[in-house]
Amino acid sequence: MSRIIGIDLGTTNSCVAVLDDKQSPETLSAADGERTIPSWVSWDAKGQTSVGTRARRQAVTNPSATVFGVKRLIGRKVNAEDVSWFARVAPFRIVAAPNGDAWVRVHGQPISPQEVAAHILRKIKQVAEEAMGEPVTRAVVTVPAYFDDAQRQATRDAGQIAGLDVIRILNEPTAAALAYGAHRVGVGRRLVAVFDLGGGTFDISIMSVDNGI
Image (tube, rainbow, N blue to C red; front, side, top):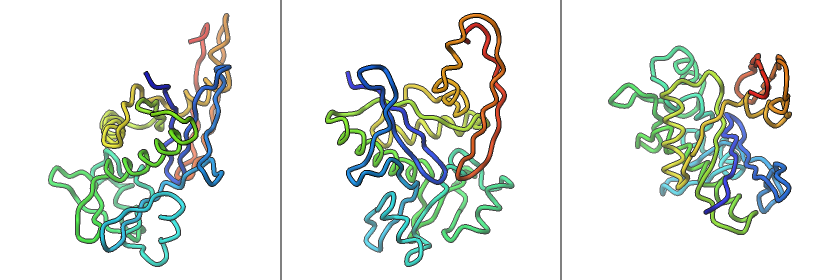
């Protein structure tokens, strides 16, 4: 059974980590040495995709077919206020799916946010497999604490499209608190403030850790 990777699927950048032999998290690097992957996907006129830095470089010459910020759209309705704002400022087209979900249109073809996110997750999977030297099929993916059930399920669906079994969706503040070691408080209660200075939003979460839970 393959090891489980941890994925931060970010609005602006994404990264991947795995527990090493000492059960300490290790952020994995791509072949070029970069530890983060820009969360950008671009399509050329023939429908071929580029992901990450290569996609971001096409933003000037191919803006209408270069998608970023898909985390703002996944699991969302096109008439949501923040989605409507994003549609006004994004250089690519955001359209309504038959069920009212927010999709993008690239070269005349509608594409779901799950498919866009799957391209990013597939790239992350490739980085992990090359760094670890073994196949990767399972992952834990972090999401903002405010993600609702539809957004979480859509993230799972994106993982499935990318060939990953998303065994758990973890709130980003919870992941930060676990990395800090807040869960190791054996006795007593602790309040932990987690600041998430992300590429898309700036959030704060207050967590209560009581006897390690």
